[in-house]
Length: 156
Image (cartoon, rainbow, N blue to C red):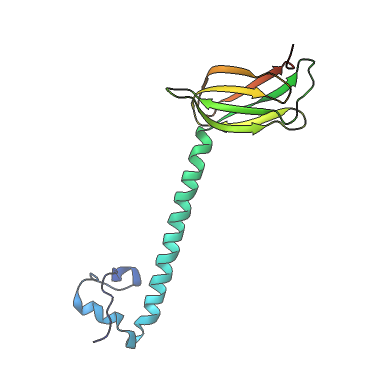
């Protein structure tokens, strides 16, 4: 007996009939050129699987970007000078406040963070300065919010 592969529909290979009919299984006999046909089927199946996987991946990757919101802003001192390296934290509000993201300001004191919709607390702090926070910030999908933090030096 030679191996037969009768699970694949023969119509995809130009054959007729059902792949489960034994009289068509003989077309897969490796001695009669079935190996080349099987390689084509296998190659086609892999290509189709790769295409479906890539399509599903791009759909999943594309979906969150449409629902994410952008929170950006600037952190300055009490004189309006930008504070580089200030820590900006986003905390999801609820029964327990959970920090979901930290970001540092750049040289110009600017920051950007992308988050999923929800209610957040946003706070900024820098070395030698007190903390400033915005509470109960409602964030909607695809929304762009801009915040300005003016931090006071510690001891004032």
